[in-house]
Image (cartoon, rainbow, N blue to C red; front, side, top):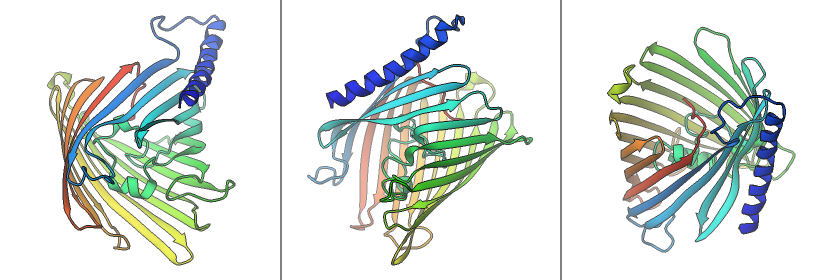
Length: 357
């Protein structure tokens, strides 16, 4: 573990320090001498959990205080043509701490209306897949994303091209290709196989205070059965935030369907699920949220799962949050209703890049 941390730390520091040197060696004036180059941030997530069945020895999510994740991020413009981003994540697995590169990529700054990205990164596929853990709308990820795309989501090594279509509304087309190394849906035994994903995002302004977004996506690639897997997604999101910033109120609602079809010698296995959630900021530092999930669409080839979550959040600043989440889950194997309560502390140190809209 210490050797891994030292290796990644030295490699990333060398990359960005040389980037900073290249920028200053061209005698360009510093935009802000108080800012570090690269911008460095650290996010910490800890949990306290009480749930039925969480006290058993083989519980998937045990009760007690847990270290959820630490995320170290370095970001910088390399020059006027490229920018770089590196994210290292530390998790606790079976009592041991593990370090792995979550995202390390370079993307272009100079192509008009388009961005080319190369490296290891989260695929843009729906409202949730591209989010880091500390940006999850709730303490945990949706069941559909976890079962269909895996615990680590679609986060592979590849290339992505996004293009802003010149129309009267916001339309973005994203084409992505990456190694078929996903743990669930694109897990080809051959290193030569690739998976491809396309995603279309449309955003309309309904009023000065509200927008609506529609997204659809499709992907295909080889799986562990040396057959073809397909994934598809559709989402709708409504956002409202008053023009007067002193009101400290906002509302967001999202509904998303995610499905997959995995081919094998015995036929196609289809899995799908729908997730819907809302986030309501009713005061300057307080949020209420709700989420409903159903996994088992379009048919019952797998045991269906239902889950309902309610969340109360105290968010004093953009750098800290305390969130209390209550879950009711209908377990498919035991057909029992399981109740759980989770308390999360989410804090960030340092300069953090802007998040997706």
